Image (cartoon, rainbow, N blue to C red; front, side, top):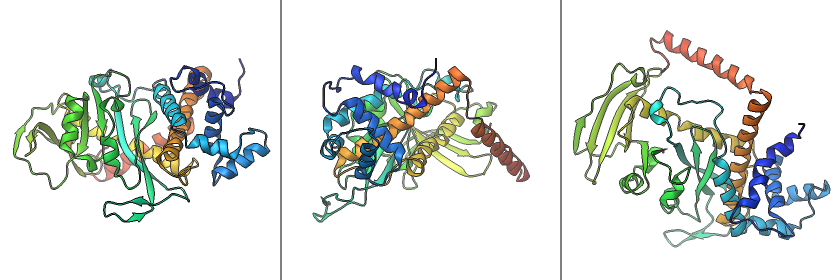
Length: 372
């Protein structure tokens, strides 16, 4: 069966819309048209929403008015709808290969990376009140994203308001939002060290059922440390220097792993509430946190991420939701092309293999080796 790439790209999103709780039918500016225009705007690279809409109207893509279009981008109901679409749709993105094949202990477990990403506020953003009481316009607005390290799909977790810190926005979310699948068991969350928050680490584990991997901070004072046994013959543990069960002044037990990258010699000190995985696996999962930075790089350099789509947190999150939707739809289409047509991005594969050989050669010249 022949199909247009454009239609195949949009079909997973448009097909899900009528099944959503926040979907409304019979609107003059329909939800399917809203989603289609949002994706087009992300991919069109126009400097402003007005310029995009004028072009779309001139090309008879839509006849929606400016008022209706910008009103929809500021609608809490439309935001809830597109967020629900991303939540449901992100679960349908399947990995094209098993990157965790050498780690059977991860079978059935979701591994997620979390990080915040800034975008400039809209041009006409009103001033917000700072903690000092002074009124000023924040430089940026921060969206907090989750990325599934197994499938590559992404999701928006939270959005800051005014001068709110991203970690405050994260902590305001219910624990269920940190699960990729409802009632998921054994979820692992990998975060950067800005979030060494003992209350959050305990709550995530005992209330949310989520274990966290992060890095320690220099100002943390360990009150008690006991060594843990680990398999030095397991090649996955190459580079592990120590594995300990530790306590701080705060309640609860944690695990500290010191790891030396066998390729660069750099030493990392990791802090986690995950006690069941080999220490070398913990180190590799933290290394894979970098995947979420790749997502932000795509948003900055390949998609139309210049300024927030409007004043206030709603248009900013609508934009982030469309960035995520475009990204997830690209992954879904790529998977379909591979499974149905046998088309893979061989250029990327060749580039990766060449870069890996260069790394191995460089490491060997220094008497080191790339981690297996």
